[in-house]
Amino acid sequence: MDFTLKIWRQKNAKSKGRFETYQVKNISPDSSFLEMMDILNEQLVNEGVDPVAVSKGCKDKNTDPVAFDHDCREGICGICSLYINGRAHGPDDDITTCQLYMRKFKDGETITIEPWRNRGFPVLKDLVVDRGAYDKILQAGGFVSVNTGGVPDANSIPVQKEKADESMDAAACVGCGACAATCKNGSAMLFVAARVSSLALLPQGKVEGARRAKAMVAKMDELGFGSCTNTRACELECPKQISISHIARLNREFLLAKLKD
Image (cartoon, rainbow, N blue to C red):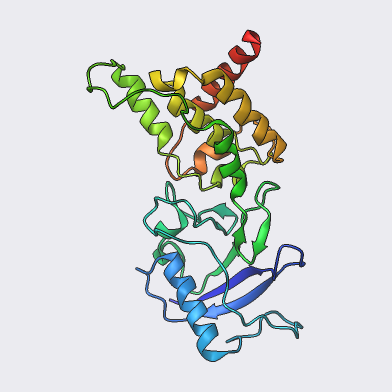
């Protein structure tokens, strides 16, 4: 399969970026999207020149390898954050970018590849964004700091199975940022809600529940993320199918904390 790639290139956080065009040929339909990017970078390194005109009339061609984030390549770490053809993680459902395969595209298709577009995720270089905002939100309260003792017997702290399952569903969030990148308001509410909900449903998390909800929402606002208006775009693009019902729980936790104050 042959593809034309329109890729966002940006030298650093302060530079002005632009789209540049590349071509890759003889790509296996069973290659993952990131493997295709590896092939492009190997091509750029080996040839030392852009294999095709970068863009018409463009004299300053960027022939450096394209910078993009990746780690586990198993859909676990959430680092492979790319906006592909106008959709977070590309034209497939419930996957991260590393789980996207080239058979999802048509032979000869032009593929547009961008970094996340969100105030909370500033571009560092090419397709790499600073995802530290999510780490700061977690540091604000996404943990249990009280001493809960040793590991108890499984039956000594009874938790309803429905609540345990819902907590685990929320904890499945990998923090990829697709929710905030997709939301028209740039909201990180689904991510924050998943972290709050996963702890709010368990006895160990209730002790600090009020402080957690207030602190994490405050940090999210401080970092420039927008507000939720329930368009459900975040739920649609979440690779782990996190439900917006967790946002409702976050709102309840937050309002109850404010009432207690």
